[in-house]
Length: 106
Ligand code: FES
View 1 (spheres, helix red, strand yellow):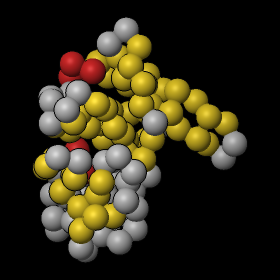
View 2 (cartoon, protein in one colour):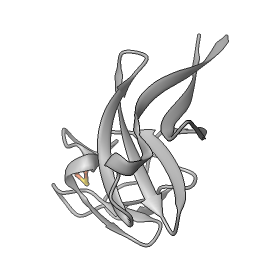
View 3 (cartoon, helix red, strand yellow):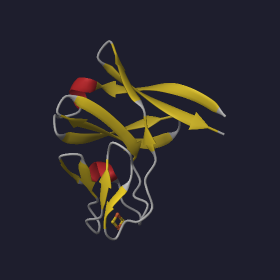
């Protein structure tokens, strides 16, 4: 397993209490800003073919745009039907105003 920090987008590009999308390590990630803290998950819903970055963030919960399932952006845990499978979540750090996402690859 290798663990890599991938450079994504400027922190300022993520609206406070909002969600933005980026590419990291060849995959789509969703980046969230909640009360000055940043979180990252896979951008793809585990329930169907929808992007969480097209969804609606309420506190720490992201609502999928397709069937309104919920995930906790801090852990990726499924937090509302019809979602039952967690979405991958990734550590985030800021360096020089830029968000980096840590992804483990087999
Ligand atoms: Fe996300 Fe169904 S595709 S809740």
